[in-house]
Amino acid sequence: MTARILSIGTATPPTTITQDRIRDFFAQQPDCDRLTQRLIRATFDAAQIERRHTVLRELGDPGRDGIFVDAAGALRSPGTALRNAEYIRLAPELSRRAAQSALDEAGMPASRITHVVTVSCTGCFAPGPDFRIVRDLGLASSTERYHLGFIGCAAAFPALRAAERFCAAQPDAAVLVVCTELCSLHIRPSTSPDQIVSSSVFADGSAAAVITADAAERPGLDLERFGTTLTSEGEKDMAWTIGDDGFEMVLTGEVPRIIGREIRAAVDGFLDGEVPTAWAVHPGGRSILDRVQAGLELAPEALQASRAVLRDYGNMSSATVMFILRELLHDDTVGDGARIAGLAFGPGLTVESALFTKRTAAVVPSAGAERHLAAAG
Image 1: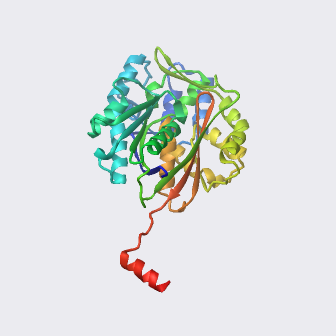
Image 2: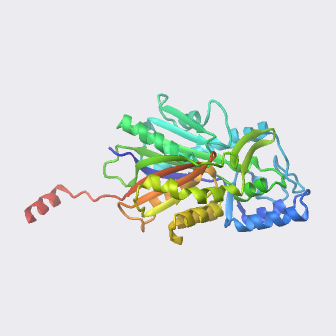
């Protein structure tokens, strides 16, 4: 039996920031010289992002004095402990909202869930996000729990792969995968080009999926196969470490170029000649999508869903590709049997690949209709 995603639920914080407003906010920081201001404006304007969501209310409310911004509009530098405390306070509720949305859309009672897989690289605590999902949704205390931490933007596909393995081993399993990232908790004032790039794209959000092999005739996305490729370089170009004033993201300009050089070999080895109907490519940034499109010689419309999510939500790390899959799941132009290829990129530099088959609702004829058809035959 093939494991199938029955539903994908999403949740974002209530504070929305527009790209031009947050661009001006960073450019107006006290320590910004003219060269840094020009770099900030050019980087933010090139990102092809219109809006993002954040748990930091002070970013959306000029003049509000908060943990991260003072009343004069200057960006503070809180320590890692304080940032992580905010993650502990805010991430579980966002996860609960996304997970409940997925359960509601699937029409699945919480009591039916047998496994929980949580994903995050923007905070940590124990008992962790997996424990909170079980407690906050009222799942059975015997629910198996797993957490994938610090895998970065590519982590959603390993989580779905784990769900597929659980379903293969236990055909009646029902797995809840929840990816939640609060990237904005790690913003900081900086003149570093790497940090400016990070500030221009990262955002907050959560996405959850319900997966089971006991799907009968229900619509969804079949989990066909997964692949992992380590590129020959890039270990130091995309990295995520813990510093004294938050998690420190390294995202150099080499990342899009490395992906552009190596994506063809990685994808050809995974797809083995198959031509997908649609693509779900993690939008680490506009330049990454551009390199994937050029490297795979894709038509501009092939990455439409990825670019739309980047435009409206920014880069929410591991949750982002789940938002894209939700778009394709509900896109009527992507029909029954469509093959969807997924790509996500993480530290290492790692390419995670996935292949899905879309299934639409099947019409099951009534007993009377079946007799009529048999007689007509």
